[in-house]
Amino acid sequence: MEEKTIFIFDADEGMKLSKDVIQEDGHIIVPKGTILDMDIISKISSGHVLEISVYVQPKKALASDTEAAREVSVIESEDTQTYFEKIKNSDEYKHFNDVYMDNVNTIKNNLNDIITSNTPINVTELLRKTSNMLHEYNNSLQLFDMLHCMRQFDDLTYIHCLNVSLIASIIGKWLNYSKEDIDVLTIAGLLHDIGKLLTPQEILTKPGKLTSNEYEIIKNHVNLGYEQLKDQDIDIRIKEACLLHHENCDGSGYPFHLTSSRIPPVAKIISIADVYDAMTAARVYRSSICPFHVIDIMAKDAYSKFDPAYLLPFLKNVVSSYIHNDVKLSNGEIGKVVLINDNAPSRPIIQCSRDKFIDLSKEPGLEITAIL
Image (cartoon, rainbow, N blue to C red; front, top):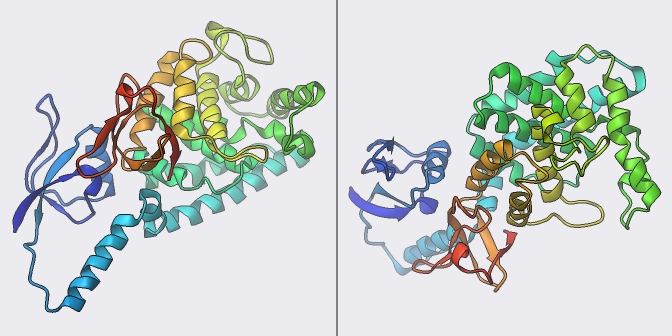
């Protein structure tokens, strides 16, 4: 076996480390001899390690020109696949898609029962499938990979609620919340937009600009949702999140124009998950917004609309989920996200070729326009 140094985004499952993977502070992230899988690759990349050493088989002489051409063709085919395409072609993603859509149907039935029959909320039932997804995909970066690939769905209320629930739960995990508090975030995400089921669909799905009256009707979904939940036997923080997830820390939100000190933490976290998912998802009146543009917008609002105690850890972690992703730059070049700049999360380092790296934090005229 030979040793070879490769970039982390060229790593494949089944490769074996020939050296310890070490952070700048000397801490060993993964020891020599470890067999790589997607969880370990994500762990290494999230530690901002750019290169690793692995064992490779020595190249053997090919039997014929035809065999050589076939091997080159296979290699080129693999190399031209985008990161998203590789994920979508994986058995893990196909399984995730099945579980995800089954969960969406469960949420749809539960929310409709609450609206039409005032059915008591069964927290255990609501939690079961979503919690199973969180446990099955315990690596939060891998779960974000899966969610990024689900963007072909339009922003239906049920899908949005599941996404917000999963994202809010992951934020709770990043903040080292207890299981009980993460469960509250999970249910709050599932129920936060229940009032939209009582809002005229022709307004929710209107492709053009809303009138002032239509906007007021949409804003009322937080009140309608709270009315559905206020007498239910559920944690008060879930009810608060439903009513207050559109409040902004600077007092510019609705329905009460509360400032930061009066907005409960769960509502603040649901707000972050809600904005991120809504802006990165497709809508009837626009296509999805590039996540790096969304991250830039949210970072600029870190000390006004959002509470930085919750937003900054979210941004720091969520941008790491885009390492490996193929992106298009505003100058037309295509490359891979290989390293995140902690002080400028929306402006990572991009590898455009084997020897060409672009640090967007030092190139103010360039930006990421799309994730491929």
